[in-house]
Every structure is written in structure tokens, then in C-alpha cells.
Length: 105
Length: 470
Image 1: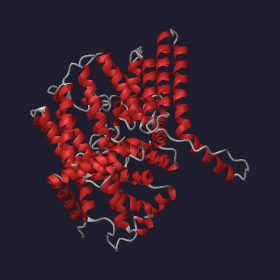
Image 2: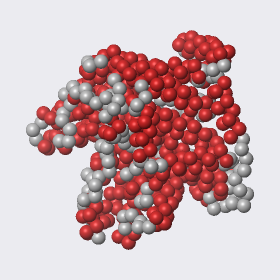
Image 3: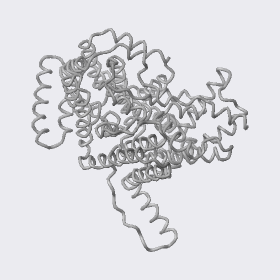
Image 4: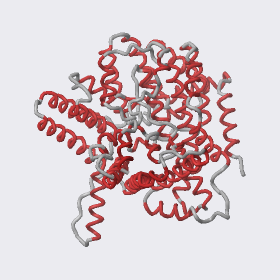
């Protein structure tokens, strides 16, 4: 048992300071401006295709002046995207999930 | 302000724009991140920003004093006062009501008339995390593991950096402060960060949310209304839900820190594939378990003073680890189970060995550890002891009735969550490598489509992350 205790002390410690993103993946990357470009493009694409979620998010902002001004914009934007047909993929995915939830044994 | 929301996206766009505009001015970038972090924290309750600032001031002042004092005895005194102040704040906000209620209950049992007043103190989000950051810093300065931080801006950023502020990971001072000394020369790992964000969003918005609403919440709310199969599946579902919820948060925190130019340590590593309980704690919430090991278990004596004291130290460490999660007896029971399990595992290790030799033996070991962890999760999730008792009792009855609540959809999500525990390590690296060749705008467009798809897959609205309440 004493030998086991000694062996225990010699065990390598858990990777407390091991980087979550390993060095091999950090060699290639981007600048802060490219990060901004990625986030901005992502936000635009999201606004186009995820507009059905915008009114719900705006409603959850509460009752303050900011929320009151954002809510009609979110609803108007969603209506515009619906007219353009960009909400169809969102609805198709939601319907598919709904059908999966209704599966029975 | 939750990570996977439009509000947070707008906030991050503003931060990214600021960081891009400031370019090489590293000091100004740090100042921007401190302001952004306090704004982020103020979204929960602006009054607690003063608490965060006070906690930062304690650590900063104590670090300077320890660095200035020549005598070890006086340094220890300053360390003791700083740790006591940090724990005092944590105790006041997190545990005062729990101890008041427990004391009053004990007084009633003893037939005493006097009752302590119940204050109903509001729990500041993230207090457990920034308290541990503060204690980590002063202890590391005392031990000589980190240089004294002489820049209040650096200390403020270490304590408040928004990706880890409210639910970790617990980032050690010795790990993070050197990153603030000078700007990193490394490029920003945009592709792995994006994968972590997308994976995290899927785990939280789709897996964790549906498991919570479809099975875990209804079954844990009324365990006597369900038979054994539903209770068993709800236990598995909670194991997957809490993993997906918490690891999703830390994945996104790691990615956001990376996008701001900083490194964070890993916090999860497929914990349910552990073959020993000890290994589970080297894979689950690694930043907490290693913190407890280095700042509690080892100072108690660790495994240096014989078998019995090792068992005692393990149990004390896990009991306090349980109490860290919340001011309730059920968390103490959860910690006691893990502490007792770790001690028992040490006792039988000379006969079992550290790892099972055969594939079958390893599979059995994984199953045993997973089910032990699940048993402990019942106490963690149940409203109180009585619910946990009813739940565990119900597991052994009502098997003839089959499942009522667990539909194929949620069972599929449990299977998906468990399958993720056994994916090969290199899959993430390969995907990140492949995405790394895509230009930034292409990554943005891909991310936009993927996030829209994940949003559509998930239920409307986002439940808060489980670890926000700790």
C-alpha cells in the first residue's frame, strides 16, 4: 500500500493548464479585423434566415424604451423576410423537428 | 445576457469592432474588455458590479502587500485575511440564508424558541467563480507561482473577463495573467473557435433544452407519477443534459476568449467514458476539480499522510465541492457520494488495478462509473432529499407499465449525447483544420446558416444555463 501511495504522488497531474485549443490549431488563424468581418457576415446571414426568432427575442427584452422601439422593427423585419421567402427553410426545419417529436414507440 | 441570443451577438459585434479598431494598442484593448465585461455583468444586476470591483480590490491589494512584505509569517497573515474576506463575501451572499434556515430548524428540534431572522439575500450570478479566481491569485502570489500583478487593469480583466465571468471555466491567475503582459503574437484561431461555438449552441439549444422540457423536468417534478423505465431514462437524460448544458457554456467561453485573443484551459474531456471515478474528475469540470485538488485537497495533506487521512481528505474536499455548488443539503449529499466513492475506489484499487485490462473489463468499468455518477446526479437534480428518495425508490418499481414520458425523440437525444462521449479525439482537429482553409467571410456565412439552423431545431427561447445558479 505504501508503494501505491508513493506511486500515486508520481502520477502526472490532470491537464490543469492544457489549452482548450491546442497549439497545432492555433498556428493558422485570423486578425481581429477578420474576426469582425466573420461576426458581421454571420449576423447578416442570421438576420436573413432566422428572422422568425427575432420577434420572440424582442418580446423577451421586457418593457423598457429600448424594447418598445426594437419590437416593431423585429416584427417588420420578420414580415419582410417572410414575403421574400427566406423564412421557409426555418419553417421546414421546425416542422421536421415537430414531426420527430410526435414519433411514438 | 445569455451567449446564444441576438442580444449577445450585438454585444459581441461591438466588442469585436472595438478590438479591430484598436489594432495593436494592447492596453486600450484590455481597457475595452474590462468596460465590456462590467457592462455584460450589469445586465444581470448592476449593483453587483460593485461587489465584483470590491472582490478585485481585495485580491489586488493583498497581492501587492504580499509582494512587499519580507517575512513569510506576515505574508501568510495577509493571505489568510484575503481568503477570509473572499470566503466571507461568498458566505454572506450564498450561504447565510442556508445556515440561518438550518440553525432555525435545529433550534426547533431542540425545542428552543428563538429564531434567527431570515434575510433572503439575493445570489449574485457568478460569485462562486470570481471568488475562486480571487483566492487563486492571492494563493499563487503567496506560493510564488505567479508574479505580483501591479497593473489594476490586468487584475480587473482577470477577475471580470466576460467569457468566464458567470459560469467559468475557473482560470488560474498563473495561467491568465501572463497573457496580459503583452499581446499574443499568435493568430486568432477562428476556425476551432467557430466549431466550439456551433457545437456548444447545438448541445445547449437542441440537446439540453429538449431533454429538460421533454423528460427531465416533468419526471423530476413528480417522480411518483412515473414507472421505473421513465425514471431511469430521466436519470440518463439529466446526465446528458447537465453535460451538454455546462460543457456548451465553457466551449463558447473558450471560443469567445480565443476570438478576443486569449487562451483558456480545457474544462471537459468526454467525462462519461471514464473507467474510474478519479478519471471522471479528471475529465469533468477540470478547472474546478484541479482547483479543489491544489487549493484544498493538497493543503489538507493530499495522499501524503497515509491511507485513512487520504480518505478523509478526499471526503472533505468533495463535501466542500458539493457545498460550492449550492447552499443545500442535497449538494452536500452529492459531494459526500463522490467523496465516499473516491475513497472506496482508492481502497479497492490494489485489487482492481488502475485500468481494466480487457475491452470487456473496460466496458464494465465505464458502465459502473457512469451509473454511480448518475445516482449522484439524482440528488443534484432533485428538489430535495424527499424527492430524491422517492425517485430512487421508484427506479425499482413500475417496470411492467413501460415508458410513458420518454418518447423516441428524447431517447434519440440521450443516445446522441452519449455517442458524443466516444467520438475520436482527432475529429475536432480535422474539422478545424478543414475549416481553417475557408476565408473569414465564408466562415461567417457558414456560421450564420448553421446558427439559423440550430435556432430552428431548438425550442423557442433559451433556458438559462444550469451553472449560472452556482
